[in-house]
Image (cartoon, rainbow, N blue to C red; front, side, top):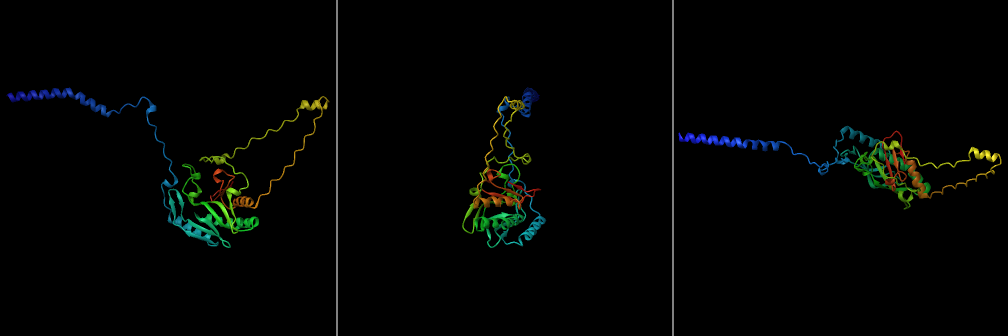
Length: 312
């Protein structure tokens, strides 16, 4: 009987204890379930991180299909079979969204003399074919006519490079990233003479800022220079006073001095200018010192498909 009473007393004490502690337990659980209130001062909160641009070489890559590789190799056989080329076929390049299905390492073009590409250039066969036509039809005739010696070496400043235009983090993909562009900075002649684009371009190179990575920029066109205001002539009142003899007859306008012709270009400058201008008939894009500061020391030549060639 005594044990029973003790048990009842223990149960009663436990019940009282549970009743007293239950609200505290429930309060603690509720506090864990409810998220803390945000800071009252928004400036103290960390700013969200901006998304990092994905560079062309880091983008997801899709391998070339067998059909794409076979078609590109057939094009190489068609374009390079009838002209003298020293080249090495390369494995398909696929680097992110960059690359080409059947690139080649071009070492020289033509014969009598062969034109060395220094260093050898990684490019596509259509670009190699266009380079051969430009050398044969433009560069060599101009070299012999203006400097009395054929070209034997082209300095390759850049060929394949997986990047956006101008190396920007964002913007259009460069044709260099498709092995579809070659930058030429120097011509070396059989006589030993060397002609660089930087030193021999005949006009002061322009230095505008590089184009922004904005698709609509090309459509905007260059901003026209401000027009010079035309000097105002005599008004109707002045003309009437002259006829009435109130004002003296003005003297005749002075004849402007004859403009002098631009000085003739020397052989090197004439050669560089001529091969640049005539390249526009062969390549899809030709950029030089007249385009922007990034091209002050080389010609950019590519085979981008366009409705009309782009030449600066």
